[in-house]
Image 1 (cartoon, rainbow, N blue to C red):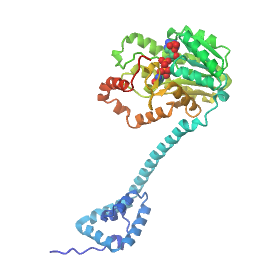
Image 2 (image 1 turned 90 degrees about the vertical axis):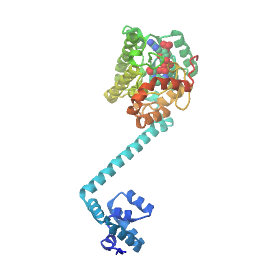
Image 3 (image 1 turned 30 degrees about the vertical axis):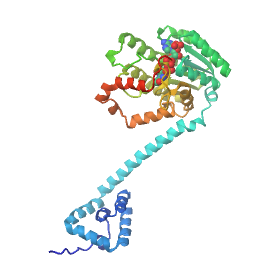
Image 4 (image 1 turned 180 degrees about the horizontal axis):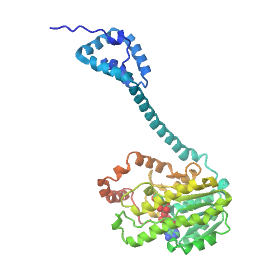
Length: 400
Ligand SMILES: NC(=O)c1ccc[n+]([C@@H]2O[C@H](COP(=O)([O-])OP(=O)(O)OC[C@H]3O[C@@H](n4cnc5c(N)ncnc54)[C@H](OP(=O)(O)O)[C@@H]3O)[C@@H](O)[C@H]2O)c1
């Protein structure tokens, strides 16, 4: 039987430069792992030297055994590769890319904590910063009503705009009783076309407006439908699409000039999760909300030097008439809770999901349930079924 004579250990004779080889020769898992985790070449080399002197002859035997099995050529190549400048640069590039990704996530986390948690204690004093009246469209129900009530609580006199005069009067009385602030009601149907805006303009004339909440919104059908299956699509496209976009343009046109003169003002525009990226079966609604979001962001950059803040708010599910008064839970907020948190984000973010829960949901959607996953064929086909199932799980109470 041929006896294998151990070759002299290169690592011990020539000073080890190749950590990988040493790691390969070792059974010690911790050592192997630590080699892969040590970031710089110099550090690894130091560790090898240290380890080698500690392990002494055992390392030599194991190393020799491997070399005698024919690993020496490969080891030599690896030595050369690790010493090459290209390898070092790629190594550095990898480290930089990894650091960038980690830093980006940490930064996002810090921004999220600042916007949704710290803002509860260090909220912007809206009255002091913007002053005057607050104007809220669609102020008799849901999110709009919650904005009107909360702004009054924070010291604003409020102009309420909606279709139904009884509901308007009821909300106005509620505000005056609870907050002792002044109110003014404007009864208009926003689907009335361009003729309604002179009336709105006249009613708002002379008021010192600090805040405008462009909240009014409409859906076209209670269930999810593909584009051609939307009932009465002709009517829907002319009312929903045209008027939603027109309301935001016109209300901004009416209110902004005075704000520019005052050198301060806040415009809050209600967009939606559906406007953040495409969702099948909410095509038209999503498109209008994408418009609102894009318009708000552009306007913010145009007018921030004039002291105007434009905030785009993209809620997920809030329990209102529009969402059939879904039962609330960790994902679905009440309109009051939602608005309380959303108003705290003013001054911290000009584009927000409004509350911590919705912000977290957005993070999951953006990073796990990405557009490609959500819009895969199977998801598109199943979309309406999934939605109706979701509504069932959340115990939709249509009678409320
Ligand atoms: N709820 C959600 O989960 C959710 C999610 C994302 C985005 N959003 C957005 O948030 C905004 C508010 O939604 P919401 O859920 O609070 O809606 P909502 O509960 O249905 O309230 C809509 C409000 O708008 C008024 N309104 C409706 N049509 C009008 C018209 N043609 N002219 C004048 N006023 C009209 C209604 O008052 P009258 O009936 O008295 O006129 C009501 O005050 C919308 O822009 C919506 O797209 C909501």
